[in-house]
Image 1: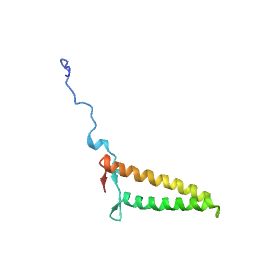
Image 2: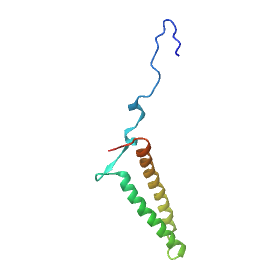
Image 3: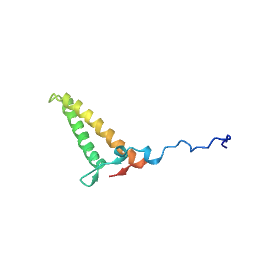
Image 4: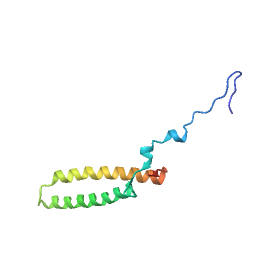
Length: 99
């Protein structure tokens, strides 16, 4: 129950408006070639994982000195996973819009 004082007007509670809560570039999933970017990131993720496993196998056999490629690919893999997860979790749980 709100307390009212004589001569003091009650004011609106401090609440964020819906349009103030979202930054459009972060809460809308971009579209590339008529598909959401998450589809393309998923395809890229599969390819990067295959490349990472393949370079790890070649590295463990000692045939080629490709350690820099393996490390760079691990960084690329982490970046693709992070962006793919951001948009995927945002779409399923936080109502991100496509487009």
